[in-house]
Image: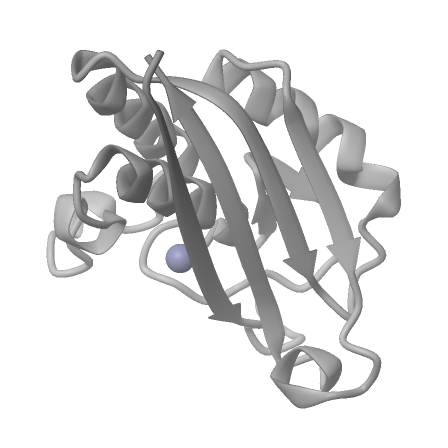
Length: 159
Ligand SMILES: [Zn+2]
């Protein structure tokens, strides 16, 4: 059995408070929360996880596969992109062994949404070993000042 690890990172700024942009994380729309700015749906969890998979599979990065300059991806559903990335890795014989994700967000409180986000990722990755950890910025840096949400993901692919 072959094994590879990959690391993914993503950060998106919050939209202005009066924006009607939804907050979408791991394919879950979180009600009554300020959304993130980005070319697609700005799903920082889906982006970090996809980049971790691409890294492990040696397939480059998300921005190259789905360029922001391509209007096709405006407001795109990032979980669709994530499924495409899983399929690309699968075409090279890789399956997701496990994934561990840190979601750095001062707001909103993510604990009540972790299980629903996890279910979405389990379905997209076809892997039960999905772990999500919400983390706050403790007042430090851009996350601590509630300027955006940053996500780190590590994945192991196996053959
Ligand atoms: Zn992103």
